[in-house]
Image (cartoon, rainbow, N blue to C red):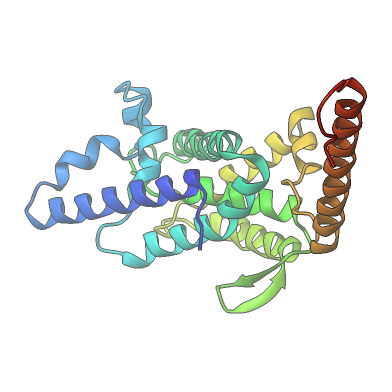
Length: 245
């Protein structure tokens, strides 16, 4: 089972950081990772401008389901998107969605007086991938909650509605603003001229077996004709000696 390079290294990086964060918490060194969480007031007032990027690699060290769901979603949707777009375009889209989601969290934090609350996790970027997959492959069948088959376009609608309604709750413990922010950034990216072109672009399709056999036969006939022509020209140019048959 092949995994594209971009998705593979994101999986490795997130898992490695998760394990390191977990071990650090066990031995009492968890504070080492605190500067890399996204805390709006620290990002803006403390000038920790790296936080909208680094928070994407941190997951709850004592909540295994957090990273598990994110990484499964990354593989499920990211694999197809990377194969369609290529690694560079995929990674650019992933990080723009993630950082954009982080900026939405910062703005929302100041608007709701929650600028001191930390946010961690790759969900903003993952929700961006979900929206992109639903827009590019609306009729593809995916597993809702990894159990129930449903078309991608309906999955996006359902997840979007649930996330929006959940964002109205206060102190839910989940950054629904990051989820909505990732989807919003992804939507805006795909509505640009470049994004529309990407939506209409598919990865290179593999020719059918019939087409491969037809091409092989055509190549054989071309080589045979070229060889006969070379033999003919050799006979015409030869003055002495045996003919080549």
